[in-house]
Length: 367
Image 1: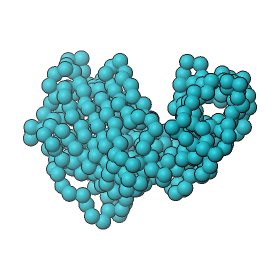
Image 2: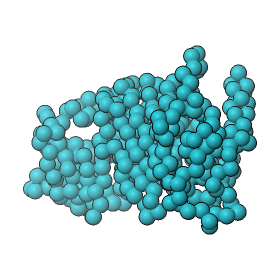
Image 3: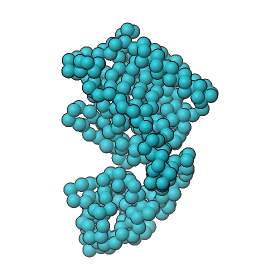
Image 4: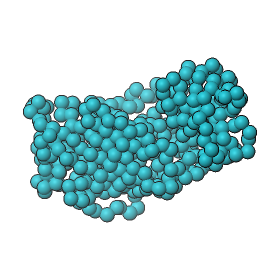
């Protein structure tokens, strides 16, 4: 059955590519394309998103930035509004220890697929097909406002249905498998997720993308993200043989194999006495001092500092999170001068938990 569904999806993708109207993008005349010109239209009058698009690299959805070429990301403020379960999934995420599905060449799911490699869209009146260079993935979505299908098994990309709201294409996604992360850094997305993605094309050279995720198992409120994609007609998709490069690394143990969801419903990184409710967030302090001792680096980094004449123990974050955000072990060493924004423990004297750490001229989020 899985093979049959794959063949049907591939046939849809081919149908879209063969029947899409000639988009205003061709490798033969890329220099003649005016990015400020009006967006092309389908025969039914709706915007045609066909083209090859560059997208901002959003490995962490709490980052906001704008690139010189106009690509942009507006992220959610850090920390995200985790539920207790969501916080546990976030704290437990450790690819070197437990593996990561993307590192084992599994499908990425919608949001993680939108970064970092190029994406080509082919479209007609009834379907839109997303061709991702990453792992040579694709997804074809009907855009005629059809209802979600009953009886489908949960999947990485879920049950995706499209409809139009004026000139905005909306893709509604349910029935995902609960294994997906929102980005490389590991923010969770559970099997209770409802994802709504919106696409507009205000001009020939620009596409806006917004998503809203309602996931009551992971987050206490809906979270969202806005991005701007840029048309890059001079580029072409290349073959991406994910397993071809990873197989030897998996066999040798350089990459930890992902053998299925092993997430725990409870926090296996921080014991209850080290989780956020154990600290008084109304009494935050900026602790400026010197690291005198590294008490632990597994499963989280725990340091002893001398600050303002006091000797304090400060819980930081899992090393994989700090490393991803750019804080190296060489910087976080005995003798380093640091400023840590931290909250005191409610019952343990001279113990704090850090929210940010400043080393040199850089401030790193720990939450």
